[in-house]
Image (cartoon, rainbow, N blue to C red; front, top):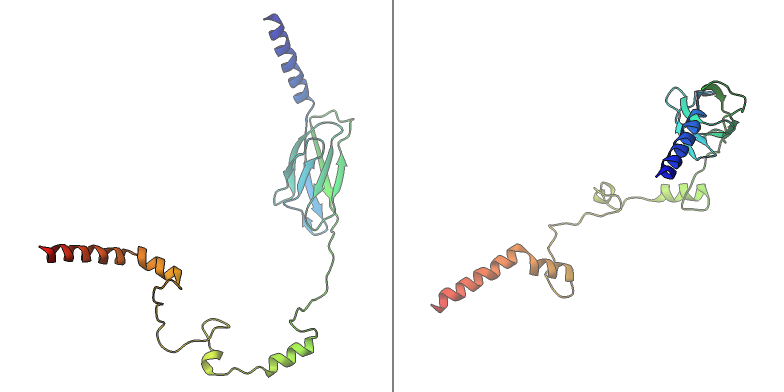
Length: 185
């Protein structure tokens, strides 16, 4: 029993000393455009981190010697090593991130190899009728008259199954049985 108590005290004392070594690392992330919000602040040693708020503020518990990575979309990653000479429990920094964007030129995608071929084909296309030009759905042609429901056949299995298992069909079968029973009496 004494050994268990000894190991328990030894274990808790190491946890307390480990927690006392931690430093509250906080600060602000800036760029030439202003504050950098939603930037990832990650401790590479333990793979835990934080995210900067709308004003670029962040806060993270770290140990001496940890390497912190600052990253965000549109910016170059920035590495910062926590100094071993820190004596205070709070450590504040201002991080300046560098914009990393590439300007891409305009791209036009056409179904023809050359833009002039596409323009020519587009200008030569004429609608056949007014209904085709003013269609409710692009690419669909309106048909005259009401659509007819397909007859349930084995060749059309969906409508066949729907007809066999529909409530109306089941009720019709019940009514036929009742009529047959009445006719037999």
